[in-house]
Length: 205
Image 1 (cartoon, rainbow, N blue to C red):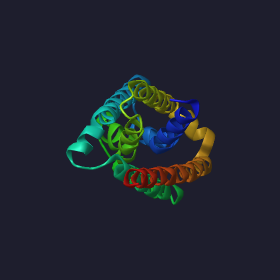
Image 2: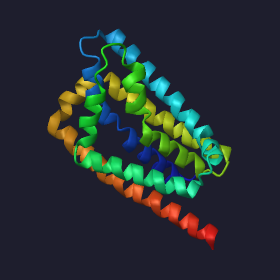
Image 3: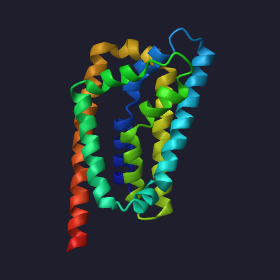
Image 4: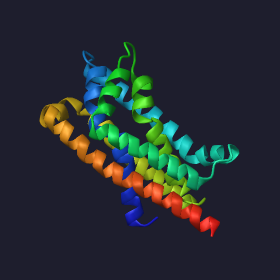
């Protein structure tokens, strides 16, 4: 896996998981908790989400094959899903929907933090797409897993420093960052669709 592909995978996962956007929600979900309990919630949430994403990354393509869905078709569908997510980010619908999901009164580490906020449909689709492009090359799959680990570590860092980040960026700063990431995700999602159409044409030709 070359450096450009690693950077693309990192940016894609970072944008779709959106650690910066999750930080204020983590603050809201753990309001009133002491530092030790908040740290435990952050670690559990990222660990559970990581396990789910690794499982889908390793076995998601096999599930697609069992269902008779080709990787080019899934690339196109995944690209469309990511594009819709990008639109949500650009028009702030994603943040409103996440706030609607963030209403757990008990331990929020499994729901809604681990899923659907971290390991949601977009990140699951992205992991299947990235590992599917490896073509069974375990070195590439391992590189994707390391990229996922790096992004999840950033999620954990943002969770643990969520209060500082929220105060530093402010509401306006958070909105600006979210919209910039939405634009980037929109471009990446279009590339997924183009890759899927190209693969279909190549197979058909």
